[in-house]
Length: 167
Image (cartoon, rainbow, N blue to C red; front, side, top):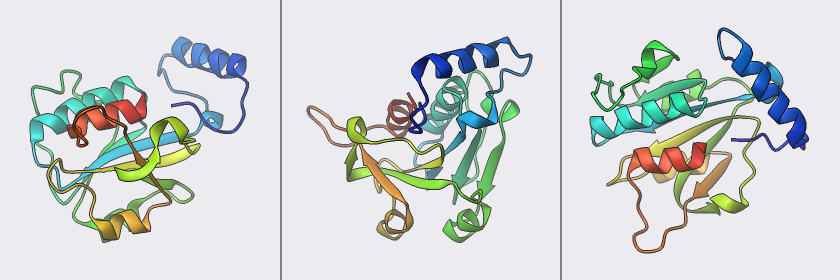
C-alpha cells in the first residue's frame, strides 16, 4: 500500500526503514493510514485470517459492521491486541465512526481494476461477506470501488481479497 501522492520511492523506502527502527514500528504521519473491515462477515475464521494479514501489512485499525468478532485461531498474531478493533452495529454507526477525511473504498466486483487503482493516502477498505458482498447502498456511498481480476472464479475469500488489496 503505497500512497498516491507522488512521493519518490527512495523517500518512501527511507521512511519505512525509519519506522522499522522505532520501538513502536509506527510510520510517520506523512505516509497516511488505512483501516480495513468486513460488513456482515460470513465465516469468523476468515475474519481472523484477515486480521492477521492486516496487522502484517500495516493496517492502522480493524472493524466489523453488523457482527461482533470472536477470537479465532487463524489470527495467530492476535491483531486486536496490537491495533484497534472497532465493532460497529450497522452502516449508520460506521458513517459516524469513520475518520474525517478518510476515503471509503469498497472492494467489490465491477469496480476499478486493482492494478489501475491509486490508493488514497488516508482510506478505509470495506469488504462484504463471501456470499452477499458489499450491499449496493454501501457501494454507492463509497468514494471508490475497487475490484480484483481473476482467471477462473470471480469471488475471492474475504481474507484473500483484503490481503491482495492491502499488499
